[in-house]
Structures are given as C-alpha cells and as structure tokens.
Image 1 (spheres, rainbow, N blue to C red):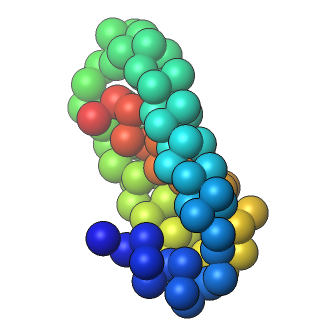
Image 2 (cartoon, rainbow, N blue to C red; image 1 turned 30 degrees about the vertical axis):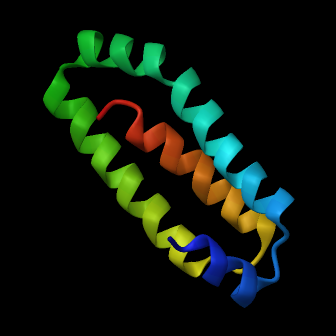
Length: 85
C-alpha cells in the first residue's frame, strides 16, 4: 500500500523497494530459529518484551528514514524484532 508513495516521495526505484522487502524477509526468516532458542532459554515474557521494544524502535526509524541505507537498517531491526512474535 505504501510502496507507490515511498517511490514518489523518496525517489526509490522498484529494484530498491524489492531490495527492502527481500532484506526484511531474509532477516526475519533467519532469526526464527535463534528467536525460538532465546524464548526457550530466557522465557517468553522477557524475549517478547525486548522484541516489542526493538520492533517499536524499528517502526519509528522507518518513519524517520529518508535514505535507502536508513530504510535498510530499519528493515533489518524490524526483521530481528518481529521474529520472536
């Protein structure tokens, strides 16, 4: 839904938008097993607490991002933060 506006507002190409989606998907998928291990080791409440904070920070960073690099960093944090949930 936001892709056309992001492309128009920030001047990203379709390739760069695809890169952002791929980065999130790969980070999210690769963090599934470590997240499960952390949940087993540290407990669900602790890991979810940290996960929700990281997820919230990543969402805020996404809103403040104005370059491709900033978007990539925000998407990496989003993938890490969203994996345990």
